[in-house]
Structure formats: C-alpha cells, structure tokens
Amino acid sequence: MPIAHEKSLLWRSVTVFDGAQTLPRPMAVLVEAGRIAHLSPMEEFDEAIAAGAVEASGGGVMTPGLIDCHSHLVYAGNRADEFEQRLEGVGYAEIAKAGGGILSTVRATRMASEEQLLAQSLPRLQALLADGVSTLEIKSGYGLTTADELKMLRVARKLGELLPVRIITTLLAAHALPPEFADDSDGYIELVCNEIIPAAAAEGLADAVDVFCEHIGFSPAQCERVFQAAKAHGLPIKAHAEQLSNQGASVLAARYQGLSADHIEFLDEAGVRAMATAGMVATLLPGAFHTLRETQLPPIALLRQYGVPVALASDANPGTAPICFPTLILNLACTLFRLTPREALAGMTAEAARALGRPDLGRIEVGAPADLCLWDVQQPAELAYAVQPGRLRQRIFNGAITYAR
Ligand code: NIG
Ligand code: FE
Image 1 (tube, helix red, strand yellow):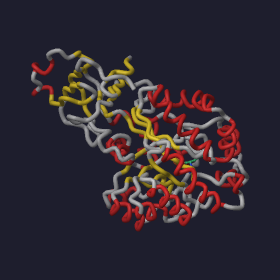
Image 2 (cartoon, protein in one colour):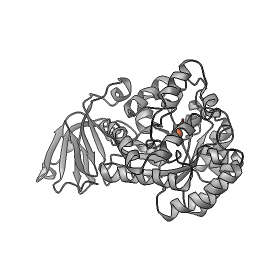
Image 3 (tube, protein in one colour):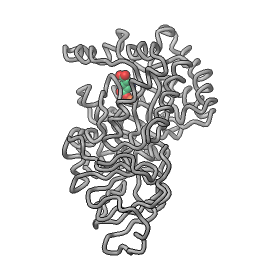
Image 4 (cartoon, protein in one colour):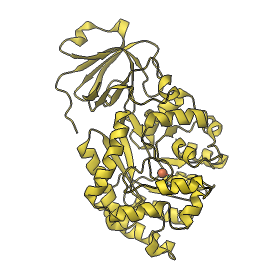
C-alpha cells in the first residue's frame, strides 16, 4: 500500500458525486494524511485552507474510488471454448452438468502454481484499476480442496500487496462439487465446514464466506451448514442466490445476517422483505445477466419499494462474466435493469461498501478514507451513459495519487 502523501492535496472546482448523490455546486476537496480533510463549495472555500497544499487538479468529476464487491478475479485459463459452444446453442447449466463450466476452471486453477495464478490474474486487476476500482472483493471457489482454496486466497491477498488497491477476500469453497466427491455432496460440505473454513479462518485468509445455492450448486440445507460453520469462526456470510431459480437462499442468508444476496434475478417478494428486515444489500451482476442472455429481470421495483440497498459488481469470472470494465457494468445496469445513473454509481460506491461490511468506504465526506477518482467527464451520469475506457484522469488511493494522466 502506498504511504499517504506527506503534503496535503487540493482539488478545486470539481463536480462531486459523494456516493449517494451529485452535490449541487462545484466543490473544493482537500486530502490530508490519507483522509478527506475538507470539503466545501468553491464559493465558500477559505484560501487559508490551501496554504501548504499541493494543487492536484481542477475541474472534472470526482467520485469515490469504485468498489467492486463481487468478483472471481483469481483463476487460471479461460473458457473461450465454452463461449463458442454456447453460441452453438449449448446451455450454461448443460455445460456444467457435462463437467465443464466451473469445473473446467477448477482443473486449470489446481494445476497452476501460486506464481502462475498471480501472473494470470494481475492484468485483470490492472484493467479494473485503470477504470477506477480502489476496493475489490475476490472469491476463491476454483480450488475446491483445502490447499487449492487457500492458494487462491493467498494470491488474492498478494495482489493487494503488489498494487495500490484494497482487496477483500471471500471463501467460496461451496461453489461447485469437486469430482472427488461426485456422489457425495454432503461429504464435500463436511470438508468445507470441518476443514476448509477452519483453515482459512486460522490463517486469516478469508474476510467472509459465500455459497452457490442453486440446482447446479448446493441445496439450501447444505448452504445453511456452511453458514453455521462460518458464523462459528466469526466470519460474515453472503450468497450467490436466486440466479437461475428461486431456492430461498436470500431468506436463508437473511436468517444468518448476510451481508448481501447476489444475482437475485429470481428473488420474490418474501425474499425482498426478508432482506430488508435483515438490512442486507442486493448485489446485482448485470455482466453475468448479459453474458448468459438471461431474460428474468431482478425485482428492481420491489427492492426500491422495500428500501433494500442495491450494489453493482463485475462478477469478473471466466464463465459468466469475462468482464474487467467497471464503467461498462454501470452502463449494463442502466440499459438492462433500468437503474438510474445515480443508482448505478451509488451501487458501485457507497452501497458496494455496505455489501462488504465497510460502510466507511465509498463516500466523499470529511473523515472518510481518501480513495477517489477524478474523471474527464462533465457530469457523473456520463460514466454510465457512454461505454468508453480511458476517462480516468487521476486515481487517488489512500490519500496518494497512484495514477495521473
Ligand atoms: O457468479 N454462479 C456461480 N458462479 C459464478 C460463475 C462462475 C463460473 O462460471 O466460472 C457467477 O456467475
Ligand atoms: Fe459470482
């Protein structure tokens, strides 16, 4: 992690999207010792505050650093062959049942050394950073043995040491049934609960635990056992829920104070209500919806009606979302799910922070950690409107400018 700039940094006349809304007047923003130290409309700015500060830039749109709260960024190989198969009409679930899909990435990931995994994941992370990401959640789930799951989590942590980004790790051992347990899914869940979760917790490698609750994943009863084991080790839970069918995973996750339920195309009103009551975040993954050409839309109107916070994430993974372009995700959320650009931006900043249990991040306010993006656009809505890489003028991480153009 870069050390915070020893001098304070000042931006003048920036249009600020603060994580929830666009502030009405051009602002001055001062960053000091890694935090936002001052924020005021330009016409109220006291020049005494500028004394000793470095003028960092002026104009443009400033947002919190983007937060990608759901990714499978660490993996080996790719699945371009399955992409082609799907174009010939073979379904995602069909490919999975034939031993491809997640399991094909499992084979490649098991064969890769830690160094190889790191080398293959690094360019994907660099792409995310170049488009504004400052906090990224990375899941395991392509190892499915204790050693290989821990290997993935170690690579995720290592990425956060190599580049200026906050990495939050999630153990997703209950992602698919490994071939060694082909006829014994309960046996595998036992391994997850009794060995993999305890090992990840003991090494401090996981910040949360996730499951894939689906007919091609694990049953609600099996997911519940995973949640119990996670809780026993003090780890918060979340779920891949209601992606291809309604399994009641969101209601289940709500009973375990889940951080978020993710995908949720098939979520019903009872599920939305349970999530609202539990204070969960709904994480939408329009990249996977787009790739799989899904037609069932997530229940956006109900989520709004019940006041469930909506986060957006890349779901970057080799199967359903080979996409490392966060502002494209903003666009897809608007075009496919009809979110407003304001909702989309909040979904990749303040709401994504909540989905990670880090409500201190994703905001531009005095005292908040200074993870910021300065964009060469006139208004925040443009970030969702146009699909265009290269609009990031400056990236500020932990109070230091880590990229400038
Ligand atoms: O979020 N739904 C399960 N997991 C991933 C897909 C993983 C893969 O296909 O490799 C997802 O869509
Ligand atoms: Fe996912």
